[in-house]
Length: 96
Image 1 (cartoon, one colour):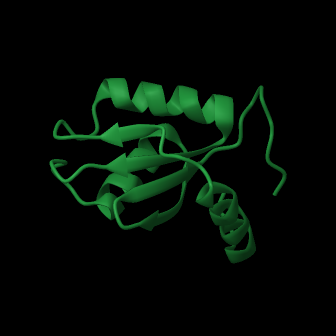
Image 2 (image 1 turned 30 degrees about the horizontal axis):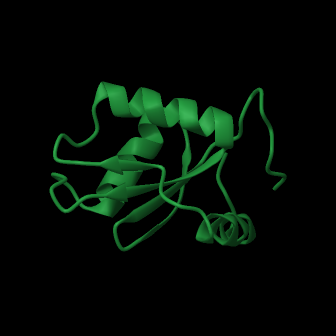
């Protein structure tokens, strides 16, 4: 599923008030992080992460890789923040 610009804008507005719930550190994207992010997306559908300065890649590259690893959409990257969206199978909260 690919998001159109209106859907992206709506998801960005929802994420604006949220706190980042995870951080990507010096280890980058590992198996543990992928599982944790996938579980969080199933529970919340929309999550915000912070990419620390020690991370091996920038926020854009990390966001793209993480989104493809968990089957999510990269909504946006702002500075070191990443916003990911994936429709939940069991806990649907957001109507696009």
